[in-house]
Length: 246
Length: 59
Length: 229
Image 1 (spheres, one colour):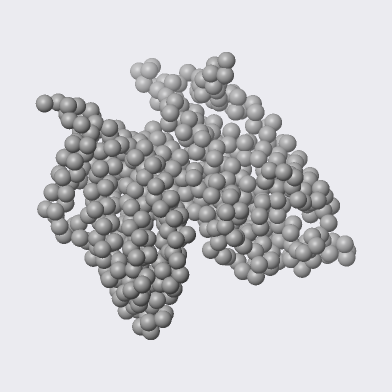
Image 2 (cartoon, chains in turn blue, purple, orange):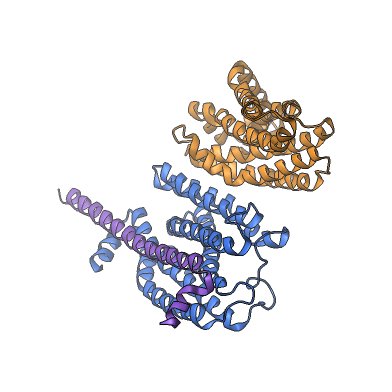
């Protein structure tokens, strides 16, 4: 039963139609969650005992960092699916992930630097988490560079898929780097098993922002993936109807 | 007025905090515009390809 | 006699011998990365005030940046000729496991480009002020590091097989995966020079090399297959 669903989802016209319909269902809730998170984070949450109002950077830094890791995982997973099952829709999804993931990785790095300066006294330290996050940015850029350099779209899909899969080892390294090594960056307080150690008034806006950013990513992904699916399609008939409707 | 000023000052961290939020807004906005543009261009290219196919088929 | 009648090890040995013979015919190309490594490691002391203590501080960095850049340079030799003249296609089509054959090529490549670095590293290190007691640690580090770099670089070379000779893209692809080698290797070298035990980073480096050796054959075969289709 799951296989029927899987192959249906992998059919380009079906995916295109589904993506078109679903996008607003992710986009608008994302906006609402973002607004709620901002109000909670900037207004309602009390200042931190140690960091004062500066801790509020977390409400943009953590979602950006979360996205940087999650998007790469989605990219690598869909690349693997595309490679194994030769599914164009999966390759389209992987290609769509890269620019989104790269931009949020860069954002995570820069907001992290701006947060680090007042809190640790330095913009940058070559500690494991920061370094591996920087490597993640290079992985995204390498992925996009490789895609860009190969002219044949099918070959670009497959070669970049191999690269994405090889690079996915970096994701757990980034996440666990703060527990495996003595790092300047603080240990996980939300994304760890067991109870988060933040008070609710600070935690709830953070969860809202994380959820909002995630839904926003899905909306962006669906939008981009529609275009990427069109680029890979040769069977014209369904495209005619789909394009007439837009 | 002092309430807004206090809010903007963010306990002295304003010079770090507001650029963070500003950059985030920028990245969120650029992603939005870029995704829509990418889709629009792909749709335009697909239409063009279909046009040439129609021309070839009818000739 | 069909190729399938030969066992894999014999086939790999034949391929390795052929690669060695070809490389030795063009000894200049093969020694270029080594020369490059020596140039880089001598550039550092030349461009700095040659007080020995400062040299000792930057010795790990100079050694490892040199090793990394030299490996990148050497990658060109791996698949270029065989990709151009169709040998890779023949290897893919024959009855032997493709991943194994590519691994054999990578091993030969390491012997020609990585092993010389291992042999020369103590020399370069002592020119940079490293004490003799540091040599075992340095040797172990460069040995493990060059193996890991050869494997990672081979995957990168496989992915960029069909592209015009674009060194910067290859560097961009290889760099994120090579950085852990750089970090642990330089740390091991620094600890050795300081007289402390380099065991911890060496273990991590070894783990990384083993991991690369496990993943690389699959990735290599997949990448090269995509490139020659």
